[in-house]
Image (cartoon, rainbow over all chains, first blue to last red):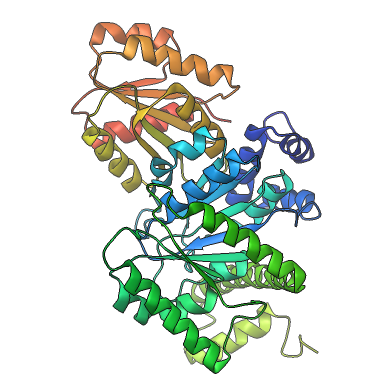
Length: 324
Length: 135
């Protein structure tokens, strides 16, 4: 029970359009534990109707502003977009300042559902609870569900496993940065937005991206399930410039995934990645507990660290032949 | 709410009041106390605050006012939240004369933090408002 309602009642209310119920379900998933498991059980069969769009890129590229402009346009066209906006938690205090709504006032007014969340100690640009929260929004009838990551550098590519379509936002004047990041960014992008395209070096930034995509074509290296060469759209998020074209490119990508049957493959991969990430989390907790216990009961005294680890692993996994 | 989840607090300035330095300081104080601050910033309306509290499932909302509008706007935000079915405490920060505090309390405002309130008082004010409310 949550307040005076069961999880099942909350899910029914959320599917009936009650935003307060959706918000409470998101909280339950984010907090984890038994209620989160209940929500997962109640929603995991109700999904795959929403187009899940990941928006990522370096800090300050304009992810929030562009996300707001895109979802406002879609809401005005009668869609029901939702946004999950992720910002970093402080590693020292666990606190966070979630500031994405500052740039999303118009989107809020247009009826876009926006939820801010902190990473809560999870690396990779997202938070552990993101897939479960996307499922709640999907089950509640929102479409598309846009997941905006923290500002990322090279390795935070979790979003690739969490979304149907990954939009990477870059800006002019960061040509070298794009070069340096290309291993991370290029490999996960389905679409690029060159934002702040009213700035002088915009054409250069676009050309740099095209060149890198040419190289990908040359080597034949392309993200699995990516049916065609990523589209590049020039945008000016603050004025709405290029946003219609971007909305078209986002829809086109979904269509391309559908017609090439890559959509089902990606969604299956997404489930596997989520299982893996939940399993990792459980194993980490179990391993921390086992180490703490071993240091308390003194069983590790005088034993080589590697031998202790091996012994604990055998214990945790139910013996060396657990895999059979 | 479960014990180890951070308090989620919506912070906003309501109405035509362009001074947000104090609000930024408060945001930082609360972040450093381990809370998750959903920062709305300047020139918010009753509607944008209610939308944010609802969608963010916030535990508490902090409104900063330096324009002497607290006796009108304070009760208005409390009523708007109640009308939306949101049982969330409201804390007002800013220049509130002592003689107005009782009126705000009577209107359902959970707490008032004056200018120059030390960090510990700000954190305690928010924590107390949440603790006396609960889910």
